[in-house]
Image (cartoon, rainbow, N blue to C red; front, top):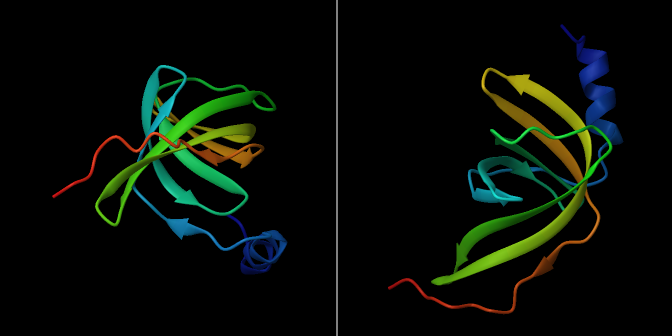
Length: 107
């Protein structure tokens, strides 16, 4: 188990605040759920195996002000954690951008 000093050092190395989330994510034909996101990275859990150092394309879906949005992203896999039949994936964002096609609004 990591010491408090180690955990504090890891927190200080982060360049952006993280926000706990539970948003649906689509990863190259598979599905998953985010655990946290920041301006520079994302951590999600999926049943799609990922390779450390690989580039992965994924889409995060969310609702804001009654409109559904999709955030299309490319990330570099920086950590992979086996979790039973699923896998936890940390990726550094390389190219996030919003999908301009807002097709629905929730009422």
